[in-house]
Image (cartoon, each protein chain N blue to C red):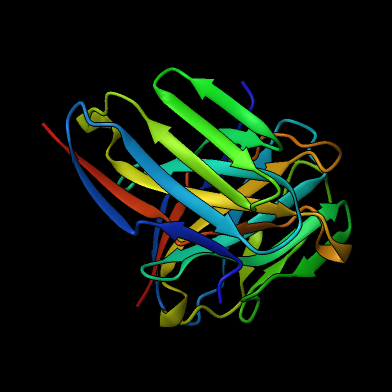
Length: 113
Length: 112
């Protein structure tokens, strides 16, 4: 089954404790992206990647890191989480060539206390 | 001004009503996506459009490229259609080609 898998689904952590949210897709998509969703602000892009070893900043990259060492995986790293990073996070992927459907992960609800 | 505008922001309907959600955009696009998000849930792709019209069950999506406008219609609405519907466009310009730009969403509530 074609899917994007995010883990964990829920995470409560303390300020400053490094964490990683994983994202994996099984469709051989070139493009992967991370978004955060906040009430009243909608979905905002954090980082995206157009292929292995190619990543770029989105609209709200501060406080986040990503890596794309393999085509299927695109982890989101918070080196020193702060309460303003409490949010609902989504990973998405799609094929770059041609107009194709976008696939989203199930979401990760992160609370930083 | 947002590049993708949706209307209405909130919509309450009675079961069985015909529903229309609108999306206007101001950038050049290669495709437009309609997404659905149930409360506490993930995001599911309903349609991807680059021209014309698509139908899936009770859902119909149309796009007018010249007018930069798309509509999502739900016929014979049902309480299980209650969700947030999000319009997203895929840019076709420069280095951000492929990036999705999202509307703020339309929260639909269908009452029995």
